[in-house]
Image 1: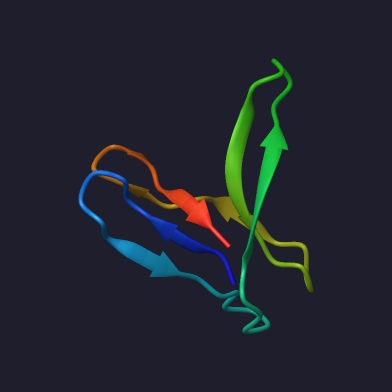
Image 2: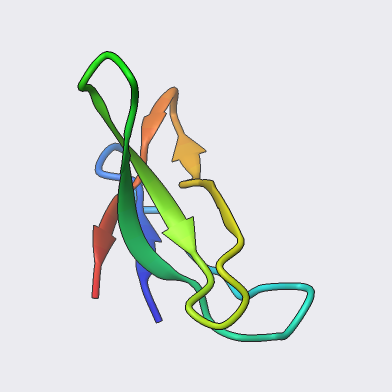
Amino acid sequence: MATYECTSCGMAVNASCANCNTPLVDDSLTLEDGNKVQISLCPDCSGKIKSPMCCGVDMACRL
């Protein structure tokens, strides 16, 4: 399971899919303009969300 941690304050979170209770994994999504966005992905049902933010910035992922 990916653990997301704030580099500013140290807050950390783990996440799982509410539909199938599978731990989310770190991934990225390439936008139409070529920019990449960090996301959390469910490997079982392919659901995805924007990765968590804290202190106004994306939380860093450590696997």
